[in-house]
Image 1 (cartoon, rainbow, N blue to C red):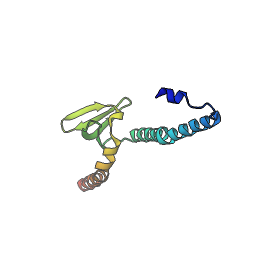
Image 2 (image 1 turned 180 degrees about the vertical axis):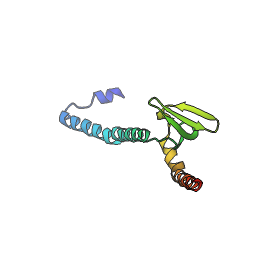
Image 3 (image 1 turned 90 degrees about the vertical axis):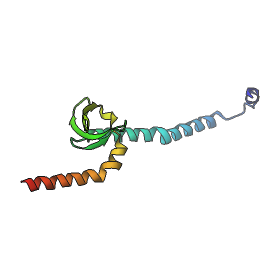
Image 4 (image 1 turned 180 degrees about the horizontal axis):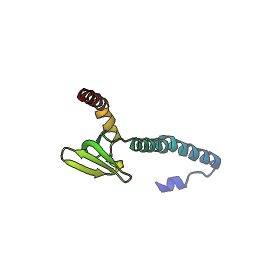
Length: 118
């Protein structure tokens, strides 16, 4: 099989080869590199916007609420106690999809209960 490629005529245009390589690089950039950079920016923004009391789901599947936020990580309060994790362990997709509307409703209920106690 290698001998077939070696026997091909050498009359090809090298500038056309450079153009094709450039088109391939641009394609890889738009299909792979750019979406990955966008995803990293979204994750970093999400990690910076975390607040105490937010319900989260970790990448391991653990559900809980954020009890404390530190520079080196976060403390998650679960039914079994408090655990410390890295911020990168929080899964953004499950948090928004699972608790987005429910967290808002719980927050409204808490405010109503607090005002009733006063």
